[in-house]
Length: 418
Image 1: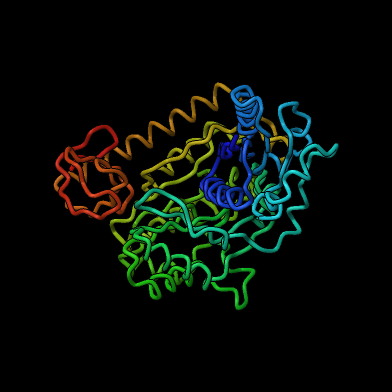
Image 2 (image 1 turned 30 degrees about the vertical axis):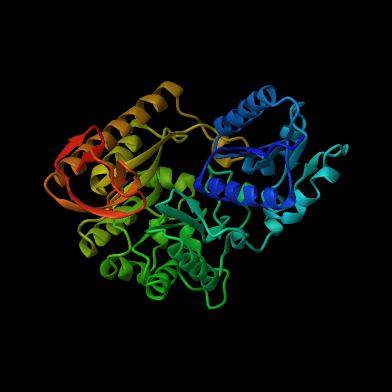
């Protein structure tokens, strides 16, 4: 009887999704079968709880398969997962991207020590060469950086991902050329701390240098996007690209986290409130159609009502459109978990206020698009996205993966209607 192909479960960020795609190719090459591979997230205590819940569910559904757990939670808490009776093997974030791990899988499983996790801080290279990208038929995600050198007080991720390391520009450009040749019309650059790209490479290039190089050397790429960035680390070349390169999409997702200076300091962020506002104002002057998304944490330890109001006002002050709101939850092992905590009901209420403010901003943005003509990249026959990343629906089929020009005639919820 032939072995069944592995079952993959991915929790967490785009980078995890990227790496799951790489693992699919690695396990296929190694002939791995009859296995369940769970790629975990560790961003919050809740994420770790969900990982354990998913493992138990998958074990019930697949009683005879080998259960392999990897990802950030496995890297940070290998003993937690090794102690679970459902788990056969725990694999680190570096090891999961190595062909030999999957080729030697049989030798690891069944050993008394069921953990294959090394020190992530000793890793000095990325594994982006493994795959060219993943995504829908229209959009591909390309990992250009991994890890983080910063130590925000709420964040455990550096201990799961290691220190920052960059993929060389030449490797990235070659990947994107292949993706364009394969028919992709949009590429998204991804990483854990994208604006730190290049700091560990010869001559220490900046993210803006990479963007300009991609746009120059891949002239057939219609659309280039940047995923989440730290606005305080944006360089002059990236500002120049915002001003002069229409193929760089006018949508930036910002890692802001808060809008109060004292909270930002306690988070150990590198920017202040005025820095965020100035960046958004400068970017809008250079590119008037620019829209911003942002991550904001509600109820960080010690946050008073007045401090929260500063975060709430930031939505208007920075003209944020797409909000990712995170109700704070303490992550064991982080400094913030030891700080005086905010009442859970207050956290929930503040998160709801932020989400409501975000919904108002989306409504304002979508209403302003009615009557305008947009270039829309089709993700499926009836839905695509504008350059500002607004979902747009059609009542007739459009060519999937292609960019179509259409006039917006109405709004339905958070979607534009073309």
